[in-house]
Amino acid sequence: MKAVRYLGPGNLELIDDLPVPHAGEGELIVRVLVAATCGTDVKTFKRGHPKFKPPSPFGHEFTGEIVEVGRNVKNFQVGMRVTSNVFAPCGKCFLCKMGQSNLCEDMIYNLGAYAEFLRIPQNIVRFNTFELPQAFPAAQAAVLEPLVSVVHAQERLAIQPGESVIILGAGGPIGLMHLQMAIRSGAGQVIAVDLSPERLEIAGKLGATACLKAPDPSLHEHIQDLTQGRGVDAAIECAGTAETWRQAVDLVRLGGRVLWFGGLPAGTAIALDTHKIHYGELTLMGTHGGTPLDALRAFELITSGVINTEILISDEVGLDRVEQALERMSRGEVIKVAINPAL
Image (cartoon, rainbow, N blue to C red; front, side):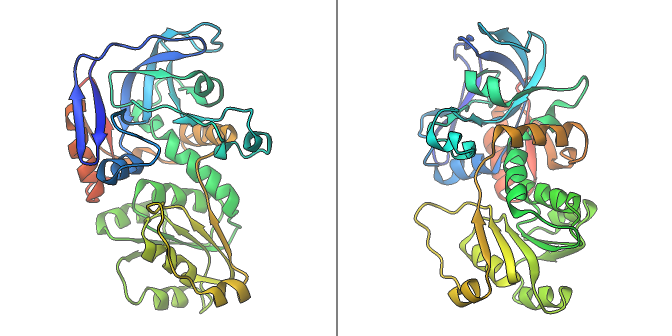
């Protein structure tokens, strides 16, 4: 089979003679119908990732058709179209028992979606694999994994009806999902901030009440004007820069909440206004991944049409153009690209 391998930052290779995998006990083999580019893939390609050591299979958002079913697999059959999350918990460690399985100490990951065939490991089959409704578009379901993380983060942020929310980095796929989830929660204002006018236009179509282009030296003043001088109730950071992490704290009101979603390189340190944090009773939170329940909710949000994932897919190309797709995504020219191994 053909598959893309990650060999290190800036180095991908398309191999055309890898053996097709076979299903072990509890596993599934799928023919990949579509894989979607992801911000994590872009970061890994550009600078590496501590969890993905090269050489490594690459890609993790997908929809596939089952071609082989392992022993003791229930509820799945050859011919079904499925999607799944990229990871699943062990179900046995301390954090799993504490109900924090998204932080599992022995998480099972599944990479290799940029390929013609993909093995789905046993725990992912058990916890986080879902059959698509008949005729539901494969590309729209392939973006399950990032929405799982957004669903988990939104539950912790707990946006209340009428609240004001700002999203920094609102034009990327994660930001656009957060925007839709915030509106679904009843936010009175959802302010989108992004570098790209084209992406801000999409944010506006999805319901953003104000769209502000970054960088903007007057951003604080604009937010004060929009919130009667208080600041927003909640700030969601999706850009993944030290500056936007600081901005998020600056833009919330006293008693407000900050969600740091965009990851920074390991070891990054930022300076914060401790006076505002302490005396203003700010709530600061980071989130990572999601639980099997979050995955189920994300799948239902996609397949019910509550969350528009069609708008996130900007183009479709073959396996030979994965690198170009990631470069286009990193430059903000596309939101996501569907990788179709049949092309």
